Image (cartoon, rainbow over all chains, first blue to last red; front, side, top):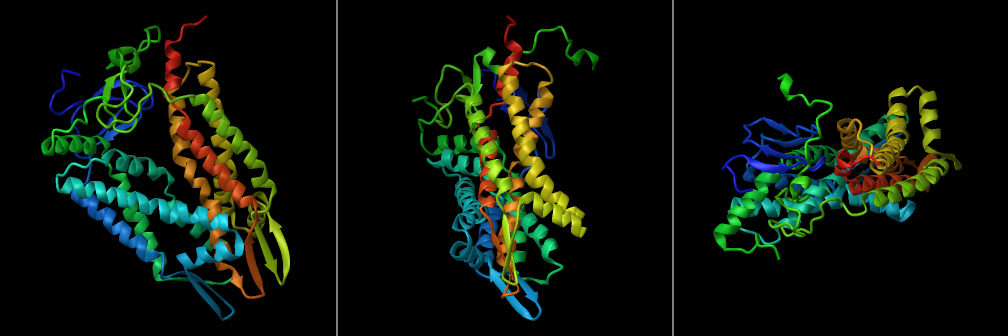
Length: 218
Length: 214
């Protein structure tokens, strides 16, 4: 590890345990593992500031999408439109509580937690501050992404709408469009995480502010 | 360029572990295998995931057990003029197909039957090849695992379809839809296969290259 050039860095592939040297990447360039062909790192990224505002936008959109009319149904003059929150409450009280809890977790709670953590860590990097709890915030954002099912939810809604479109007229409330926008900004926020850049920034800001003992093995 | 291609008889290129190095799964720092904690982020580090095959197999067995009620029990109960009619995952796909909704029928069939089954089969196959130390087509196996990991959450489509149907179809006394117990078992299948994928360590596949034949 002594011959660390300023730009390129050593990396061990997480999928096949192969040691590679990743050269500095230009925008749009991608680095693949020479042995198992996994994508290791890609060059095109947003700045920490852009990422912060994307996360903030997603969080506000998520908050706005729950209380307002989401989807509705008009059959023979009977009109009914419900909010996302209201429909989950209905399922919880009248149908199957566990189904409501699972859905609520995967489409609202987990994305919200991920976004709060993402905002906290991008914010601290904008101010070039060191943060002690960065390692676990990062873990939440990085590993939590697999458990946020917002895009699956939207596809699920579309599938069921096609299923019942013959029965009645479907009404789309403002929250439905807000949720669709949220899915786009949320995907952009998570899709542009550069692991290496974040950890390098953390080390750099940490060493500037205080001579932290983070590098010493305990 | 031709010199760059690996000769079939040449010994395999060494993994990082043979060079005394390992990496942190969280922050990707490279350091000596003698350390048990990542020097950068302090996360506990193991050279390979602990009891990788055992954990994956246990979760796969869980998902196979849950797969049975998920397909036998009804996922929706439709009350039309007060009369209930139950529908399973396969039953729903067949009736959609008969109505002529071929696209929706195939989407639901692929997402809720083909993908979960394929995930269970792929992960079982990968566990078997770790145990047998099979060193053939490692690149393809790694790719297979990555596809399994990405497809994981898309099986949840059926759960969200049921949620939407239950919410929307409440037209007074004419017709209502309620969820069936099968949908919870099905969500369990998806969640346990997702956990099975996270406990599997693809580096174990590549370790087979360095094992001597007995």
